[in-house]
Length: 68
Image (cartoon, rainbow, N blue to C red; front, side, top):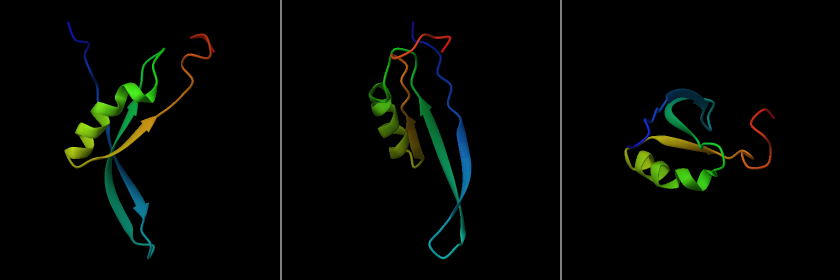
């Protein structure tokens, strides 16, 4: 049975080259424990193909205990 998946779409305001505000919808991808950002690459590509910016966060989930 597939695990449920939650996506959060953030609307970010960025400053363009002429200091004009740009609203950008962005999906932040965060892999699970004992995984790497590489496990989220296919999803990142599909989300990008749907027109969203993506941030695929990498963190050292295999280097520390859960408590750390």
